Length: 80
Image (spheres, rainbow, N blue to C red):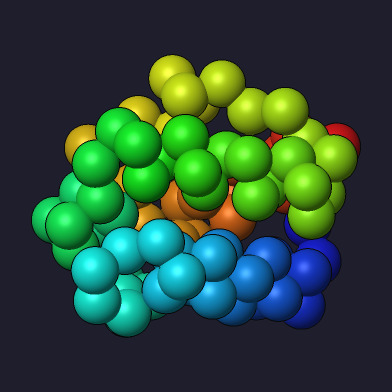
């Protein structure tokens, strides 16, 4: 995977999260620890679909920590 693509996707994820979460997250912040809830996650998934045409399942993003880099990796993998 191209590191530049991963970095730009991570930046896009952070921008999406900043518009959804109560406070702008840092790259290593966990989505849920930063105030994210299930409704916010659904909003994020809708934005991912609109931007990338990738229809992710909620379960694809659940992990010990849902950071921007992990979300970007899931998106990039789904784009194949």
